[in-house]
Every structure is written in structure tokens, then in C-alpha cells.
Image (cartoon, rainbow, N blue to C red):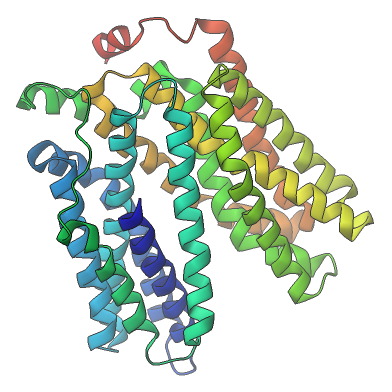
Length: 392
């Protein structure tokens, strides 16, 4: 947790620093677009390449290799300001962060048990959220235009090696396949979106919805706020409200998901998110305090769907499929991140600012319907993994 927190702080600082640098006059728009596209492309690649690395080297050594790659990409910004080369650095950064998330999430799912998986996953999500927040605070302290910003970001990634250098080892996994034979790896590779959808439809829908939510709510909320007449500072506070709500809700939601059926949890979260979206679209502009309350409710529900959905999928999977499943689900999440901001922006242009919540509310509706389907289809404890595996 300490290592991934430090690495995420460095990544968040780099994202902000690169954006500020590319905003300088004299940089061609084509170059800006190319560099900004590199990170999500690398993220998609990282989701696909991690499983073979873990199968060959194990979680801990793969994590160290990924950290080294992240450090290499961060150091590149320190040693050169040749902007076209930054495409490679951002590509490596995206690959590193995606691989890091796959390693951590699959390891947590293997290490945790049914009674504490939700709580452990919520701690992991809270750690990454705090890291992003600390990254922005460090950017403000160092100075958005400071020449030392890239150096500080690289140092944060370097510090992520401290637990490894100190000789601290990850706790042993309680249950892993006895021998990661090639046939097992091949079977894990076939655990794609279709197989996961047969196994846990609500998880596939919920993870994709989380990708839609996390990108659009943070990127488009400032635009939404200014378009409905809020000041720039108030619009920024809307984003902060959503972020704080998600952070505060992670631990209690994770605790509840360990004690109640996670499908019921996702059903309730979906219904609350739909209600919040509809309320924001219809009555949110009537009162600024009401708008902030509704945004807080939405953040507390929509931003906590991801860990509950991941924990439910893990409870349905045999251990040999954990890494492949984590990579596939993170790939779905990143597709939601990349594919939908343009759609949401287009809806806002043609239908007005509240149209942003048509997309977000639609995602929450799909989560609700998928949770109902999962609940009606079979008990959560049914031995379905082998059946799905044979079908695939």
C-alpha cells in the first residue's frame, strides 16, 4: 500500500505537470494531442501485458519491474524537454500504472478472504484516492510552473522502492495454484469480457460504469459548473466534493459489502446513483447548497461501485483466473475512461449542461438492472465458475 501510494503520487504529479507544460504557447496542437493520447493508450496496453509477467515472475517481482519502468518514464521528463519524446514517456507511464493496478488488485483478491475482501479493497481504493489528492497538493507546494516539478515527481516514484530496499516482503498468499503451468496460463488468457459477463454480469457492467463515472465526473464537472452559472472556484469545489465523498464512503461501503450480499449492495448503489443523477439534472440548479449535497450523494455511491464489483467477481472466480480477470476488468474500466468523455461533451453541447447526467445516470441504470439479473439468476454461492470455463 505504501509503495503504490508513493507511485500514484508521482504519477498524479506528472499528469498535472505535463498538462501545464503543454499549455505553454508555441507547442503545436497536434503534438499536445499526441502526448495526451499516449497515457490512455499505454494504460490499455498495460492491462493486456501484465498476466504473462505475473505468471512468469510472480506478483512481487513483477511489481518491482513495473516500478522500475515507472521510474524510467518519470526520469525521462527530468532529462529532456524534447516534447515529441514525451509520447514514449507517457506511454510507459500509462503501461506502468495499469500493470501496477492489475498486480495489486489481483494480489488483494488472492490474499483476501470472503469476509474481508471488500474492506481490503476499499482500503486500496482509499489509498489511491489519497495519493491523487496528495499529488495535487505537492504540485501546489512545489509550484505548477516550477522547473523542479518533474524532479519531485520522479523522486516520489523512486521512494516507492523503499519498502523493497528495506527488505520488507509481501505476506505469503494463502492459496495459489501449485504450478503455473502453460495450460493454466492459456486458460486464464481466455477469460475475456464475454466469459466474465457469463460469470458475473453485474461486475462487467459496474466496472465499465466506473470507468465512465471516474473520467467524466472529474473532467466535465468544471465545465458543467461554469455552464450553469457557477464561478470557477465553485465549480472546482464541486469536483472536490465528489472526491471527498468517495474517499469518506470507501471504508464503510467495503465493511458493509463484507456483511451483506454484494449484489444487493450494487443494486442499492445503482438506485441511489440514479436518484442522485436525476435530482441533479432536474432540481440541482435551483439551489447551490442542494447541488453540493446531491454531488456528495452521487460521489459516495457511484465512486464506491468499483471495489464492491471487483470483490464480488473475486468471490466467484477460481484463484488461477484472478490475474487474467483483473486485467480484463481494468481494460473495461479504461475503455469506459477513453470512449465516453466525447459522448458526454456532445450531449452537453446539444442538450444542455444537465445532459451530462443522462450518460452517468444511464450507466447507473445498467448497474441496477445487471444487479437485479444477477440476483434473479442464481445464488451468489453457486458453483458456476467451472461451467463458464467449460463454455469458453
